[in-house]
Image 1 (tube, rainbow, N blue to C red):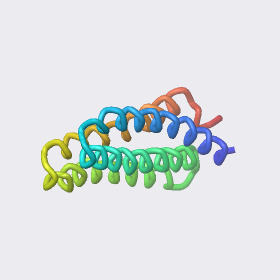
Image 2: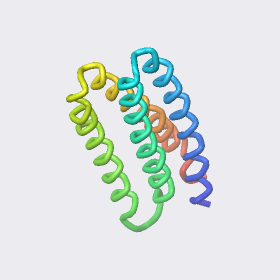
Image 3: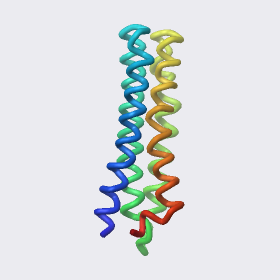
Amino acid sequence: MKRGAASRYALASGAGALVAGLVVLFVAAPRGQVTLAAGLAAWLVTSLAGVAGGAWLVFRHGRPDSGFPLALAACMGLRLILFVAGPLAAAPLGSEAVWAVLGGLFAGYLPPQATEVLWFARGGASA
């Protein structure tokens, strides 16, 4: 039952992340290849971390072991690292790339995070 819930979460979260990735694509494409590559790379990494991490949280939720707090800490830590390392890695490419990375990070972060919050708020993890 939990594996099915994690799959349903991942599908919903991934769909939202895909829509956000298309927005990044259309906004960054006219600005050049460096901007496009930086924005899409940041979106991809953050989306994958959010969808996979959220599915892990859904899967571990409600179990009597310490898996849920571990998953929560790992997900939060990875997202924090991405938000610090991404702009630092893009800095040598110029301010346009840094802004593209920030946009891509937020586009990859917000849909999975919103899905995660709504999922747990409505009790979807236990369904």
